[in-house]
Image (cartoon, rainbow, N blue to C red):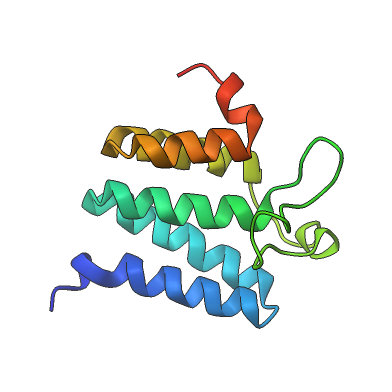
Length: 123
């Protein structure tokens, strides 16, 4: 096996496990590493997935609500504030753009229906 073909997948799984165990800082680090590797190696669809997962984990809407209704694995809002991470919205936007680039139009529509701010964003 070639690490560049699967390292981003391993890191994404590790991020999900860290998140489930309440290790939010480690989860954030693993998500970001997964994103970087997927992007570097040209796995657009898996780059999109990793961006979507960190976006869901760290998304807080304009009213201070987390995405817990959208994702059973999203971080509690109180924990999100303890982790230094870019905006969940930023990563959801990046995921949407990657899915669009990959040609996953139904996924893009689903994301825009779930998160109306994505529909308002100019491409």
